[in-house]
Amino acid sequence: MKESEKMSKEDIKKMNKKVIFVVVMFLLIAIFIWIGLTIQKMTVLQQIQAKAKELNAEENVYCKITFLENDVPDYSSEFFKKGNTIVLKMREGRTIYKNADTKEAWLINENQKIAGKMIYENVLLDNVPNPGYDYAVGNDEKHIFQNNLIYSLTSSLVSQKLGDTTCYLWNNMGNKVWYNKDNLLVVKANFGTAEENGQKVDVSCQYEYSIGTVTDEQIALPDLTNYTVK
Image (cartoon, rainbow, N blue to C red):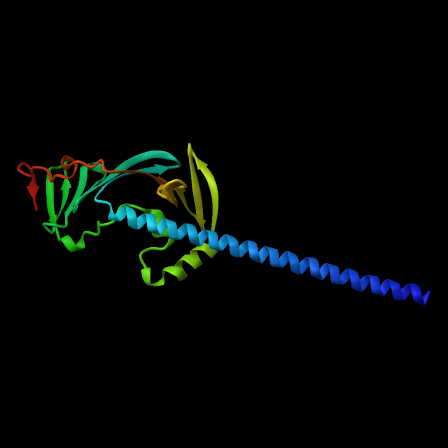
């Protein structure tokens, strides 16, 4: 009887050791997977940053931004860049012109035929629209590694089809951004919900980019002869 009890205790000890071993191995595997996923996310972020810089360095860029409410198109804006001239066409006939050579900036309302000259330095229209980059890391180059690490730790990254496009889907505390896997350009960004007419609507934007398609006519300041200039 005593010998049987002794063997039973030894078996229990062996079983406990096996359980501890399995738990430790499971934890180690989970940690390695977590580290691997974090490294993957940081690597993708670095690629996105490099693409954003490459895009901003382009001399000829076009971007169409379609604003959606509950995934239904509401209105569009267009961004044009050619050389040192940038034009942003907004809703209701409003357009911003900015020229780095002349240091001039204008706000034009084509519908109302009103033109207002603006202080060049106050017009923050320099970079190609890229909300995914801003969501991810902003422009804090000094703390880029820390920002990337924090963003990676607080975000999920999965592959997802958006129409016919295979995308990276980043989800950072509800802020969702889809990147084209082939070129790392933003396809869609979700901005959460807004209240309209007493109802909550899902607000997002779709982005279309093209390189080398902007013409001189598209960035030309219109003839202001018949405008009220302020």
